[in-house]
Length: 330
Ligand SMILES: [Zn+2]
Image (cartoon, rainbow, N blue to C red; front, side, top):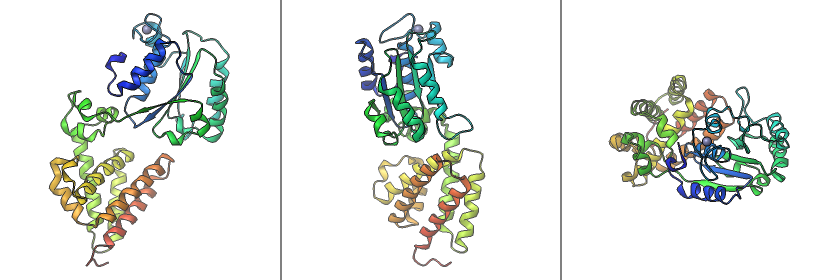
């Protein structure tokens, strides 16, 4: 795939290519923005442009051995620094390895490119070690740090890097890929998300999550036990729990839009009546609280909290909501 084929964020692409063309490409970059908008893809494209044996300087051929190795992840000068399987953070040893490469010449290509993704999963120690590399990087070394939230990176790292913000894609840009309308609406501007979704799994996940919310909110007696059972069912399902949380975010977004009188802006237009029914079963400010809690949960999951524990806490909060409905007995 060439630069021209990159979807969305054209201003970012143009600015970066301009810098390549002028041979003043920044040695430390941060790509910040929503998951699945092409940050990593663009980082690899830049690595190719910096190393391609045929085209350049603001382009690449996508066919020479340099380009192919970068695509395959086997180029010795282009390193993808990420969290190893048994770990929760990028370890200082990984950063030290990168630093040890700085004084060496590129092994095969013209430039060394270090892609840290997700860069926000560096701990304090790793971040501080990386700072040394960012202070005076050699001419032929480039750092690209990728993060969803810029503010999760150390201020000192941010101040030594040029920041590029990636916007969510327009739904029309995703629609142009010829995807199902339900998938387009569910993508939330993330092409990565759109590509990983299919209509059937959206319907299944949506159904399970709605049932969970409805059971929790409508439980009359032994509320707690009911919602806990519901939560256990939820976390036993085969799909990734994080996926469920994002499904819940979308559904709660719709419920809130309905509750706030803006039903035209909902994602799930095909089940509007059902959502209206769900929305009406609890006061608006309580739905807002669930949404806020959901954000806490998502952050907790990033920190690897126990899934069952998180669902139980969620169930408790939801139960509290149903307790607020007038006329409800326990
Ligand atoms: Zn090439």
